Length: 244
Image (tube, rainbow, N blue to C red):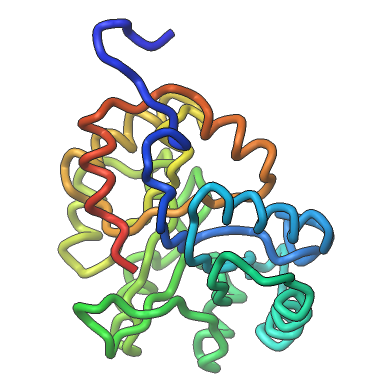
């Protein structure tokens, strides 16, 4: 139970979704463990639009267990956009790349789907990456350095959820130019108390540059986004990190 000493707000009530750019979602239908069909994708986009989200990056998984190709994802993206009735949300396609053997091969072939670039560094497209929650990949730090050498800025998805990471790891990531992306639902307890507390520590230490929903199921998202768990200080701090 949240303490009664401070007023709490839900993510929906906070105003943070108004005009938001969501840089991490799994709404492209039938390509990964996210939304599975076109009808649910259209419903999800309608709900997010009604909540105020204005720009959305569709970032399906690419990993050894889900070996999506960029050509297939682009085809699915075109099919989705052609079905949208007067969309409220500006849609873009990228991917969430698992740092595994498939990524190493695809990256060597320059076969990746980056996000856009930050206004402060337009020449360096952002590449959304992830790892296992429990263990880093072999040569983790070398892989990140290689991404940077090839002209991309790595964006590490949901760093608060990696149980193997500690304070010095986040500082090292930031020092080497890796951007950290907060999953908003981490602050609601959707991924457990450990992830929530770590997210708050990273937030107030200024580590996050981007935030996203990481939405897989819109009903689950709305349920957690309705939890009254944010203080006004949380909201004010969050308001400064969505810069894509």
